[in-house]
Image 1 (cartoon, one colour):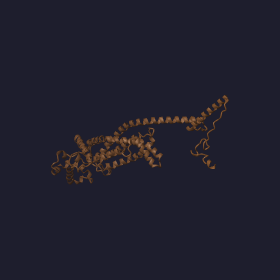
Image 2 (cartoon, helix red, strand yellow; image 1 turned 45 degrees about the vertical axis):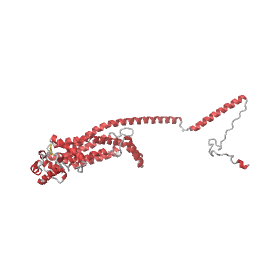
Image 3 (tube, one colour; image 1 turned 30 degrees about the vertical axis):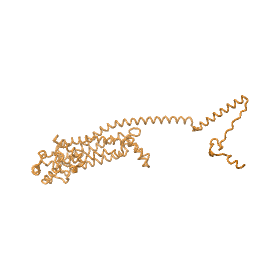
Image 4 (cartoon, one colour; image 1 turned 90 degrees about the horizontal axis):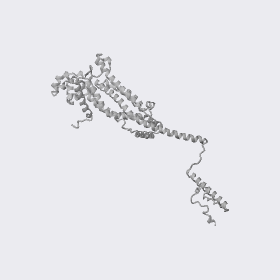
Length: 412
């Protein structure tokens, strides 16, 4: 039993139970799918919040990242170190920043299994029984199925009431609830049918065909709207190193260019898939996209308040630094004005101390000479001690052990 367990069951079993419960409660596959899409987005909300927060942090860092690239255009090592330091300063992971964006995508594929296997997850039948139901109906009406076996349960689930007698005879354990099948009709549309892209091949131009054709278009439109609003919201938090919004840099950043490409690529894929799968999946995408758009607006406003407070602190620090630099420049300007020729005196500490000592010694000598003259004493000036090198400023330039009379005794 344990070996038969798959990791995808962590998603399919609880979400399948939820889908079955909603269908039983509403008795409408369309309403159940809409509620299911809304609830799934709220279940994924914690991961959506993580992803949104990470994306906004990455967006607001773009001007500073581009500044680093301009600062070290030919030194990839220094560029990487500077970027790593910036990521650390902002508390953004260089590797895990996009992880939260991929987790909902990983959950998305098992969710498709829940939608395309209604016999298993709505009628609560084991896989073996679901396959038996498909085999019985496919034997009786093979032309009702398409070549895509992945959606055999969708086709069979809506045909169960029509072949209830054959199924009851082949599978006696089936209950009345199972034999009632799944009603995919919603607002006159069969959500279990695959929309036809070729409008010239339609057998009739009625609400059923037109409605199925419009659902993938609406799903694609909702995704375009979602990505456009998301990009605008992310650009609104892009700030430079001083905390000031930088709209021009937001448009030129690499992330903005990538988002523009994804803004058209992803909806195109959505549109193509929408005409190859049952309309229920497109309905799920459309409702989910609208809910994600609303969540994105609310989360952006919430996190922008936090980032605005951080930017206000950064702006205040930048203004204080500018004030300090302006004061330094003012002092330098005053000095230049007072000394236009740029003549400066030596301000070495040692030389100033030496000059001060020499001044004091000269003052004492002058006072002693004046005193001696008044008393009639012959004043003898002290002979200035000569350095071994003969250079007063560099007394040891020939070495501490230099002695000019070192070899005088040899001549005697």
